[in-house]
Length: 297
Image 1 (cartoon, one colour):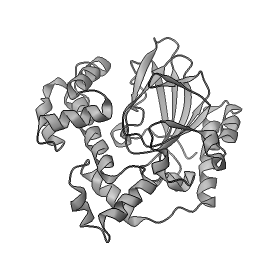
Image 2: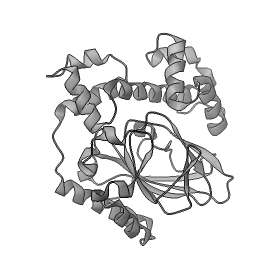
Image 3: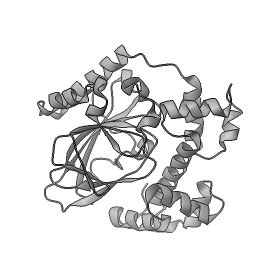
């Protein structure tokens, strides 16, 4: 690799709630994350490692959706997500529409790749709509990806930097063999929604494109796995979460709802709970327990 950096956690959206390394998770989770080489930066948000700390009690980590997909490799104990054990050792983690809950125990040892929203298609060669169930897709279900063979190689490589180099080589080879399609309208649409944190109507977005809403829907189903409207909702809720973390108890939730583009509290609460499983007030309580009393900067 060309060096390791710590990306801005705010820019990483919901990727396992990544934070700068000095901030330990109250769930007992230790996180490390690494930037990809330049050739992969248009596609990959980061590589990450998540491990349980033996000195900490078992807990639960919230995995918030950001419209992105990833690859996941397990080198520890059985994975438990949303209260159920997940069989296998490697998976494609498709775009989620709801927050998942990862059980954190001292045996947890995961390595993953998180792609940028809409950028995983060249690597999996599968319509993302087929992977958007919210469940992990076992590696052996997509045999052409050879994820099980990669998992075995990674398992035999105990050094973390060597594991990441091996993973990066795999991605570069797949990118070389399966040239990424040029979809400028998709990139423009994703950028438009991201800059507005999901605010602004899809009808307004379509006026800026050289085609209609039906083609935009097809592009999103193929490359993102979600409709533009559902993706926009994830962005709005992610922005709301960031505002709650930053404002803490000092900022009324009504102000946060308005800044996130909600014009009534009922709609705000409905969307927030539909995605996270928590009301905004419950999420604020979670933030206060996790980070302490001061707002997050």
